[in-house]
Image (cartoon, rainbow, N blue to C red):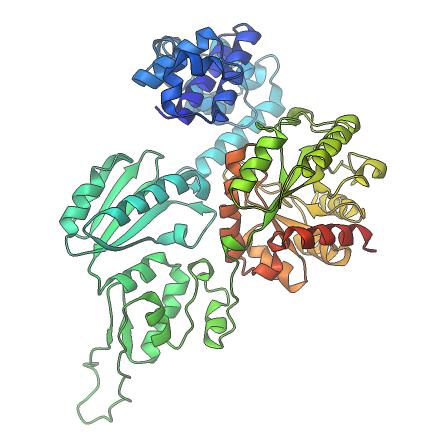
Length: 591
């Protein structure tokens, strides 16, 4: 088992112990051990060494023995015994928003509910509302959460399946019979939600590639197998389709299976205008129309079809500049490609630093030093720390005294760095009336302020918009974070007038965040062309709560590209000295 899988087992034990109503200290011990293991920098072999395990904070002798057993055998008798005390499906109930261990325990003990389907029926019959501590309002919320879950069944966040997909891509590329390979479909277009993953492989030995593919360790089951297309189910649950083609067919197949459907329709239309037919395998001359009589004047002869060896050749043949996959939604890319005005999109290498990251001072998993070191390992020049403010009790928000302590620590650490800088900030809650969670005197001591809505999501569009705009008008607010509050496949965006918010951002010089956490990817890519047109600057933040999540910046870059953004549109493409000046300039700006 991997380190992360062992940590998941420890967390599952903590959850099952909660359901058993065990000693809170025992529950917390397993939860803390899981958290410590996630941030442990050692190798898997260290987890089988009692001396190495003893050095990991939060892991005592009893838990160390279980970790050693898991690392060595991949199994744990204690977990199997705990699971045996509950129906297998009961853990699914934790995926329903608003249900914690106490409520699930009550549902199980009083109504014998151990699955989502049983819960749905109990809600429909009104039995849930009758339980102490529930009531009609809670029952209604549970019904809505179940309905939301069903609606999103079969859909996956891009970030949920990215690791599997990239691993498969690398393995396919390394196969000796692979000539070319890429991921197609909505994944290649960087859609935030995907239903399946498509691989296109050019090879002279399709049977060999297919045989290898169906036996890959990530494949859970085979759905269908054919000479050119094979479908499987991966461990994550997503369907994965493999298409094997010849090298000559590859550019056409990759283009077609990348989509979108609307983009493909326009591509075929442009081919027809030239007297050609375009499909997933080739570009060819249109066959003669049998309805045209022999004596009728012939149509203008079709142009000679140029050689197409790669995707860019196909676009060139149709009189277009190459369209990056992220832009292929038929939302203006053809007009821009025709008149040579496609933007030079943002690249991952353009990112020089980032903001909106958390440490153990609030609800993060790593220290300031660990976050700084991880940022430097990624090649970043700066990192902005923004702990939750005091109103975010569930996120262990910090008060003014602790915030000032962190500011002082950051200033001290900056004296030790060479070519790297930490910026001191805060993620300040926007209260219901639009006021901020800290007074201006403490905000004025910071390098930047991230303003966020974390509560009272049920306001009307007008009220929510006024609330956010009032916060943005505070001169100390630098960044508006995750502007719609959405959690992909879990929580819909709250009602807010985004054009009005962008107008305020333009007038106040507030930077708007593209939150790169794969569960958010907010602001949505569909709004960025408007933001760019208004002169609003983007800042891509990972909202990282642990060191490894800094790499979520990659997801944000994909969404920024999909939103037509360039290096010039993204503030954290500036080098450290320039971003420091930009932060000061924002603070001194008059709205």
